[in-house]
Length: 307
Image 1: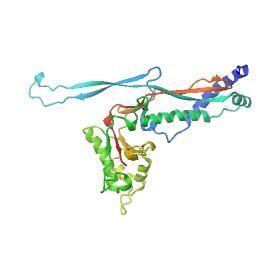
Image 2 (image 1 turned 180 degrees about the horizontal axis):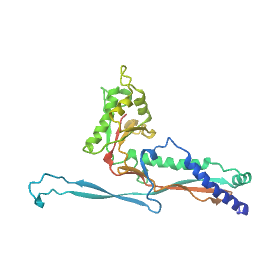
Image 3 (image 1 turned 30 degrees about the horizontal axis):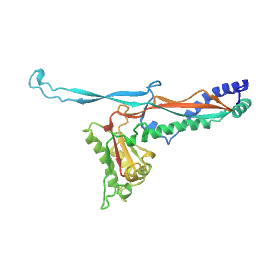
Image 4 (image 1 turned 90 degrees about the vertical axis):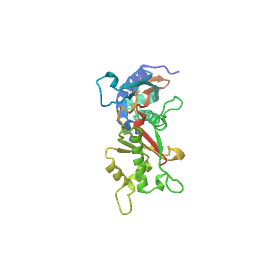
């Protein structure tokens, strides 16, 4: 077995000093194809040391009326019922390593250690967060956006004798009507109390909206017509919505992105730990903690499939 020497101790100290630079640079690398942290408000406030996140939701009930007397008995009762909700918080992570030879060579030459391994480790952690955000984790009972049991779902309207629902088989007016139907469905489900401000579509759907004109005589793109109608709703293309619906159809999601309605809970962002000697290498562990997508008000979201 390899025994640590003074030279190894120097290598370890050098690696620890390098890790600060490596970690900072890893977090500077953009990942534009990873959407979860930009689509939803991210809550890092819980911190470390807890294994469960609990919140209380309230269902307000009550009406008011014009009073005919000053009697207390004439006043309608207003109340709020409370419900406790909780999710478990899980650890995730991975590791990367540098060999004694690599560290000594960098130390001797006054060069920096390879950055790519730290970038890859951080990327892998963020990819796991991305998967859990959209698909959840069945083994641990974590629901994701696309399989959340409480988010209402609808199906795109069927047209023609073959009852087609996909946009490839629809004209411009029918495509726009599908989006209008989503908006109206959510408004109806919430008695007009929710106002969506975000629309997520698959890349194929986004391509149709941005490229297809309303008609041969009307050159306005469908996305322009939609934005003119709903100026407050931003549109985002999301790869995970491709073939995520019934019969491998695409999915659209419309919601209000307020943190009071839905948020991504990451109590601890990826952290790099001190290097651990292991034979002829030093292993750098990484760790993060994740509760997943917290949906406080499921009716503030709506999922439609069949596109």
